[in-house]
Image 1 (cartoon, rainbow, N blue to C red):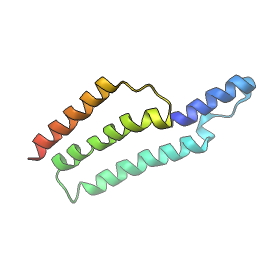
Image 2 (tube, rainbow, N blue to C red):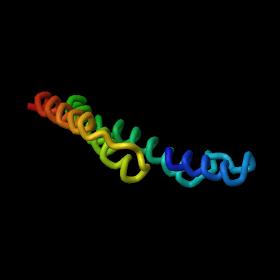
Image 3 (tube, rainbow, N blue to C red):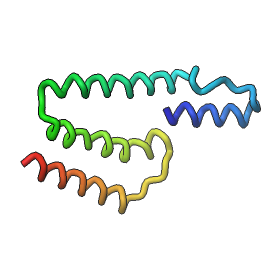
Length: 98
């Protein structure tokens, strides 16, 4: 969804206020569908696994977001804090699972 907002900001700078709404952007729509689909899949998965397992494996979302956001969205990468966060999340979830 952030990609859609960045594209809209670029169009506003080029065209002024006549840029189309961000809600009509295909990136925004696909991001919204992905968010809703992930919630529905998570609710469906709760039938088959314990909450501890699902919560501990959901850290992959945080890890992948922190790794992919600098690549896809051009956000700034802070290696010290990002790698510390990844190690702590993996360590904590490993302790919870075992």
